[in-house]
Amino acid sequence: MNFDAGWADGARQWQNMMGESWSRMLATLQPPDLGAAALAMQPHAPVRFDPDKLETLQRQYLQEAGALFAQGPAAAAAGADKRFAGDHWAHNPLAAYAVALYGLQSRTFAALADAVQADDKTRARIRFAMEQWLAAMSPSNFLAFNPEAQQKALETQGESIARGMANLLHDMRQGHISMTDESRFQVGRNVATTEGAVVFENELFQLLEYKPLTDKVHERPFLMVPPCINKYYILDLQPANSLIRYAVSQGQRTFVVSWRNPDDSLAGKTWDDYIQDAVITAIETVREIGGTPQINALGFCVGGTMLTSALAVLAARGQEPVASATLLTTLVDFTDTGILDVFIDEAFVRLREMQMGAGGLMKGQDMASTFSFLRPNDLVWNYVVGNYLKGETPPAFDLLYWNSDCTNLPGPYYAWYLRNFYLENRLVKPGALIVCGEKLDLRKVRLPVYIYGSREDHIVPIGAAYASTQALPGKKRFAMGASGHIAGVINPPAAGKRSHWLREDGKFPAALEGWLAGATQHPGSWWGDWTAWLKGHAGKQVPAPTAYGRGRQYQAIEPAPGRYVQQKA
Image 1 (cartoon, rainbow, N blue to C red):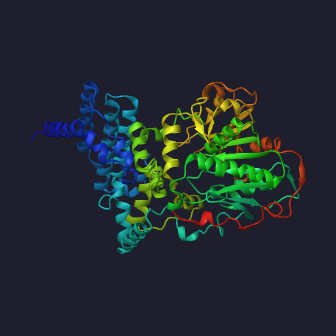
Image 2 (tube, one colour; image 1 turned 180 degrees about the horizontal axis):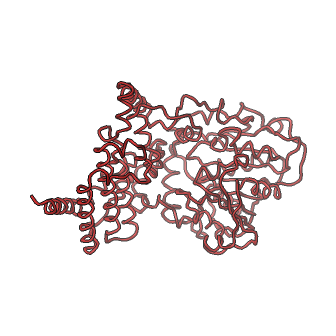
Image 3 (spheres, rainbow, N blue to C red; image 1 turned 120 degrees about the vertical axis):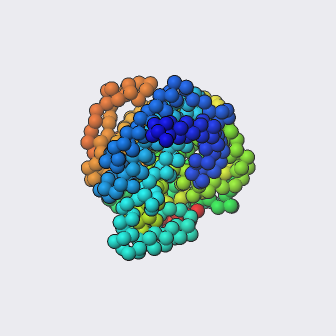
């Protein structure tokens, strides 16, 4: 058979398969943990391609494939892809061919996604599904094609294979892929170690108060509201990178909400329950303990959305117990939800409402898997290769230990959040949202706000973080940090890492690009700028308290970090 004719025939067969079965593939290419999202993401009409782009793509595929086989494995350079960066990949003919073919298929699939004749969201969903499949099909994920894993098996006389199987069985028992050596960490022993005590608790949260590290503290107490989709100690990993300890060291009398990990007893809890009985209750409790008419508050990620909702409820009631707020990587305006938008539409939200809107739990492991598959090469397949093919134990890393310590969510809370925020974006529409019996209007939330966004954040895009400056009418300060959703926030000054951007003229153009045009880059962490801002709203300094809580009503219940953070999903 003529070589070109054979490849042309194969390409035609491949193209026919792609054109006829793409819709079916979308349902099967999703990571299994995405569950309902995979169903919701199926296209509602047959997928069609731009004929001209398709013809060009076929011709390019034939040309590149022919060149590859004509030039041999020397053409299979790994390039910049770190999965194939080792010398073994270039020197092993089979591996080199596999990498080259994989690169060709990857480029072709990406171009196919761009050639789809559909709306932007459908193309984004197809692209996401394609990326998941390509990540799973990488030659590095298979022992037969991975020369590094093969070499390790030879060098260890098969011991690496045995360890890999043991690692696989261990991870199957625990229900998730090990990203770090979890045996090296214990909450309260070497993470979440800042000294403090639980001074209040109810069925939703414990309130932690921290021991002062200074002789004097600011008179207005400071409350942190972390996201309830994770555990609070992302703010207190190690003494050197603890935002909590840093705040305490700056003379802030610091309190933190530690969420209970929901079980079936909380399966009916709603967004209203969390706003009234958790966030507002925490605000009032801290205010009473501090003996002040106002406190300062911080919300991180979903905790920031909850804090903003609580402030709007209080404003509707004519109450102003919070003097200033800090929002870290927070969505208030959900116009741009980044990569998560591929999951959200009416069908998906309605399915979740049917499944758990009246009761039930959104399992923490399902949610954690979904977030991991947003970056599959870094947070999934990297560990499959290391743990199972090479039989390695991942190094101890506090951040990844926290990332694996997942939490459940009450179904009604989760379903309401999806519809009213991610799908309908009602928080920024005056009077469109009723929470705790009050119509919310962010125009009434006039307190000063410090807003932080991370430039490479894939969960809260930097433009979406900046959009809060347009939704909140009070005096504002915006800071943009380098890196992503977590690393950008947890960036202590002593580390001397990354940069941040500030603008000093007080202007907030409608779009981020306009703000950046007048911003200045500064080396290092944004924490110092934020601390100086917070001190301006914290009141005078007073002698630090010598005991936790206040009087008989609020006394130390148990040492920090408390019981709730120890609960496993």
